[in-house]
Length: 404
Ligand code: FEO
Image (cartoon, rainbow, N blue to C red; front, side, top):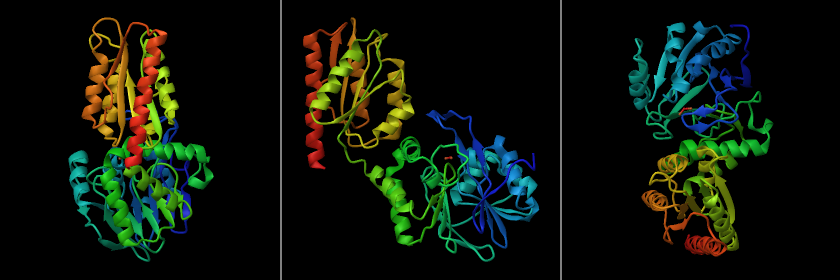
């Protein structure tokens, strides 16, 4: 295996030595339609440093890439910026292969790695703001707690204006290209947004704090190197940071989502009529039938939305399983500033729409109208009621946007 994979030069002093996972499609519930990368980097100071490792099954690939530029025995430091297993999973093996290397992590990182890996070796804690001279280059550590785990930290190299940002500013995208400018802009935009929505949305307050901290530190940035997806260069960076800032604000936008499932087509008819009402109210509307939309794609659409309407038929006195799935997932991501609505068809009990409304209310979604239920199959008159329901929510959203 050792001669198969090559390192990729990023700058004179930094090599990408990560792994490409073309196959993964489920990343703890997130549909990774385009696979991912586990990025790790070699920094060629006089004391050679490895930044992060990869998911354990990809260690042979990483080791092969490292060996293409340096003997493992020459590595003197291993920095663990993030203790999630897709980056720390290879640490025990790496420590065994590089017995002279000192392993560094944040205070919370040391605790997390000790609990996960039960290492026989010592992991040294580095403080927020601490600097480490690695011979010709400096590593500067910056804690970024809850972006997105308690242990998370960034590592900055001032001489290269280069930031290792672990999961921050990353995306799940397997590609042979290493730089963002080499990748189709539509793919890049979507996967960047999808990653933010599914991994980071709930940490919006910490994102704002981290961006403020980066401004305070006045770090010049020519490169951001995340642990997943492509590398951002100087010209990309203002756009990348601005997108995070805007997403973290979660201001209501003129976009309304109608998420639904259907049993015999009645709730789908209601969704279409409600969508028409929202359109008449001047909004950009997306209908998201759950048969064709994964929970993580629904979460992505929440970015920039101002309204979330959810429709479910009643089954066994409850909402549809796919609706329960997506609501549980969205609730955990804590979207803010949404107007909402619940609807659905039923045969006799009709409890689903009330249950949906209850969950939306618990999520903090404002519900300007009562849930709308229709028995069996909607008539033309009832579809006009559905359209009026959509128009009322559109008006409420317009008022909310005016207030923000
Ligand atoms: Fe890519 Fe939070 O691990």
